Image (tube, rainbow, N blue to C red; front, top):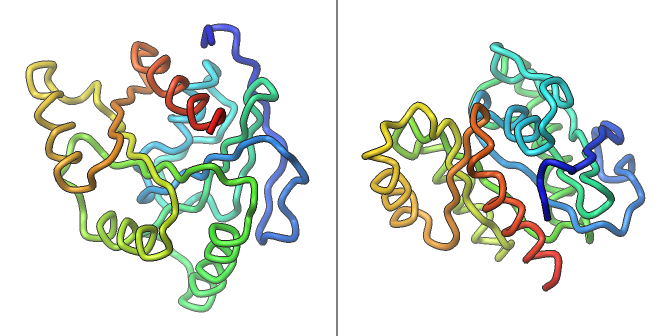
Length: 193
């Protein structure tokens, strides 16, 4: 797939499973801490600056936002974990809705857990991965903000994350589309499974 010609568009936002779009496209759900760069990941893959709204305020995404990539697959941007200035009650409601979505949405091919390449893997990243593995859900890891990591250290950052989480670990930069083809290959390979 030539990523330059990807046509990505926003489909809809949903709070709960029953509001999710009807679709038979393979779906990839983005998991990550607030401010890990989920919106930038979508914009970078789509080669559009403003498709997904980015914010400097962590915890801005409060709904599941669905994006169609050239009618080949869908990416679902989930609310970030680990930070949100909302009531406990609202957080509990999100958690219930997100669990329902992650466990019951048939279209999900794989989860994509984003971790920030500038920092060590955080405790809430580990907790999320434990939850994912407890339910035996397919997951791949994408290390974001790799452009902030000196070139000489990129491989060791990826190796550390691989040692921590295992499985497929891919680098990503919202600034440089150099890594996009690797991401698309992984997504469309999953599509064929």
